[in-house]
Length: 245
Ligand code: 6PG
Image (cartoon, rainbow, N blue to C red; front, side):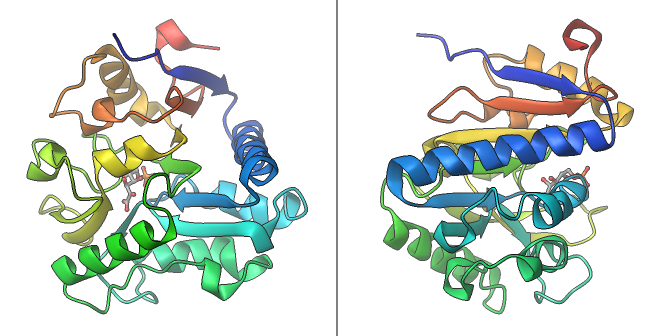
């Protein structure tokens, strides 16, 4: 049976995209809390989601039940949490320092540990939280090379079928090479996976990823599945012509 087609939504760039992405996250959060009394969210890194996180903190503060929310990171650079390239630092500054989420609900990646031990410890925490479906929503970005989280083209992590979190190596040109990342099985166990992509520079890779319906290890994002159909929230700059609004 073929995988369900992804859900693809396009919004004008800037505020309209940010508002729509924040609204979708809040909608999924409300559904999760209604159904299970909690919302478990994996944040994506990189630069794209920052404006969305800031919008959630400023304008969607009341729309998400932060005391019932748990936050994880889909990938993290193996640096201290106050490092300029830390996804934790970026999420704290944009969102987590500005909403009433209990500190115990912010599941920091233990980057003080060596990368392999860090990945193993994070996986232990995820499995202790929920051994089947720890995530209601995994947010994902898309690199120009087709990577997502810290799963890079042709990487051995793409073949991982059992572990949930692994140590990966970003390409030499990356800001930080040592990473820990969710694996495809963990992302796949999420109730929902939502890609957030903006900018004309991503249009071609979005087109190539969507065309690779069977999944291509040279385009890791094309291998992503979730329990519900994968969702793409893109701005009009990143939308291929055949998906233009
Ligand atoms: C990271 C990310 C990575 C990111 C993409 C897109 O830690 O870098 O998780 O997967 O989402 O590289 O990054 P931009 O949003 O900066 O284009």
